Length: 123
Image (cartoon, rainbow, N blue to C red; front, side, top):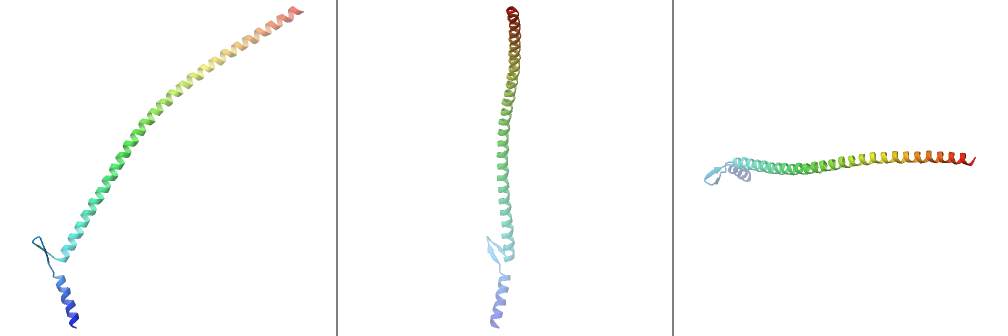
């Protein structure tokens, strides 16, 4: 039974114990609450820091998107220029084909006329 009394006395001593730090006296409960508050503050600071890093990464990504947009605009301008050149080439080819076709028709007509006149001369 003596052992039981010692355990109870020890529990009472721990419950009533005070820790003196920097001239202030603290109970174990106050120390536990203080450590809890301190860990919450440190956790909040860490969360804020990681959030700040993500915001920085996003801003770098937005800058990359701006450079991609500039490249896309340049490519779009070049594509429009190429389209305009292709249209001009297409129109020139159409004109050339029409001229060649007209020349071939003229040659064919002249050949037929010459052949007809040659046949008349032979008769």
